[in-house]
Image: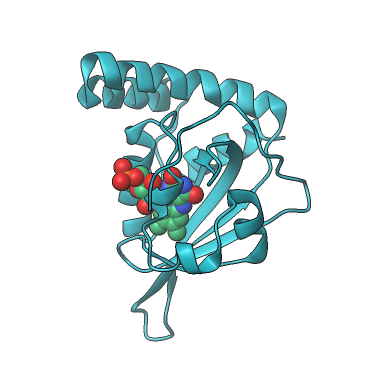
Length: 173
Ligand SMILES: Cc1cc2nc3c(=O)[nH]c(=O)nc-3n(C[C@H](O)[C@H](O)[C@H](O)COP(=O)(O)O)c2cc1C
């Protein structure tokens, strides 16, 4: 599938919208709910078995996804802001909660992401942070971006992933 050229058109996520997807251990999509298709503009057939990176917007810094994967692989939930690319090149912002689901015997079942709308305040704050991280990534490399992300965590006394999640949820209040 060809990646759409990003355009500066925001797609609205309403307060009632809950955008859900599930994936296998590699992040390949195994389920999407109807609102996922409606907002992203993709059919379910074109999404199933594709990597979630199909939604990756070039404004998203790599360190955020690195943090997301590191945390969910440990079986811990992640609450993070994500700007996603739609089939028409437009975008939408969400606050995603990504978690690992387990089978009754404790083995891995799937990953699930539940995404909801965010406030304009949260959007502004996060766009600045992500913009700084992305600029460092592009100009100085991923290590510099990672260093700045680590400093952001330290400056905000975020030591545990639960504190990260609380910080992100509070920004959206
Ligand atoms: C359940 C789940 C949901 C995800 N949802 C998104 C998403 O909405 N948008 C996105 O860009 N990446 C999402 N990801 C992360 C992608 O797997 C991927 O790491 C990211 O798009 C960056 O792509 P890259 O790792 O190829 O650089 C999700 C991962 C999982 C496990």
